[in-house]
Length: 312
Image 1 (cartoon, rainbow, N blue to C red):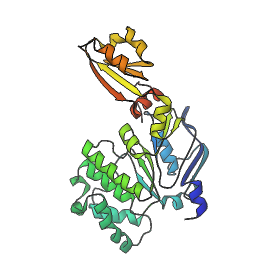
Image 2: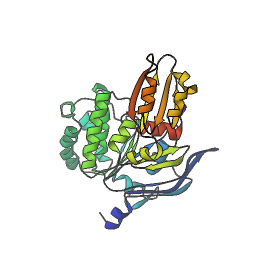
Image 3: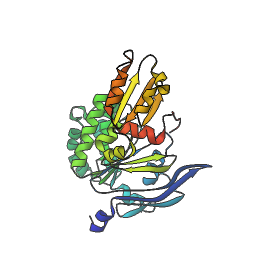
Image 4: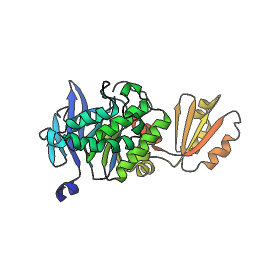
């Protein structure tokens, strides 16, 4: 690997923009990924996450801006760049007619790899995905978690330097998600770089060394998860729920917090020191409280709002 590529980063996106009709989906976006880094891209539906991934893959041509990856420019050098990429999309694209091992074999051929080379990699990839016992099973016989792990193993068949993962654990139960997280952490320990889009804040905080927060196609925050939380939020959160909790919004307790928000029947008090608030809440035995440190979900909701958004 040329030294200058390592210094410049594996992926560099500058002033990227994309519109569909009158809607600007990506608006002047810039970011980069260094070797061995996991960059998480988070944002509400319609923030531009998937469109950004598609442009980085050469599947959509930007209206403006530059994408440099792995020593080339996208989309000009798409074939050379894709030879060094691994991709896991939101939805499974496994071939239902092939077994797990055959899915890996056929996919490897797309990269021009020799059959002997692919077959030599298949046992290790199946072991990595905890699917050795399912080598001869077809995707229809696998659980959702198994399918996602097979998709990840398939993305590794060409030994990529950079992985682009678009919501790789959506639809999985907690056990399957945790197993996927373990595999992704192993890849990071091996020096792989990952661009990850996700709606799971615990996933982003667990895996990502740096986060990019998007909204309406623009970058609204960027940094390490804990640093962003410290920059934008009060350290303590007290959640109050139960009969009559919303009435606290108009009570003197509001003055004991730096910021107060309501979501449904729950009131969130954001404070520098929760002790006075917790003492005052003892006068409301009918209410339940949860005292916790501020987390990435609080950051997400503060920066992008609590309203539900439709769309992709």
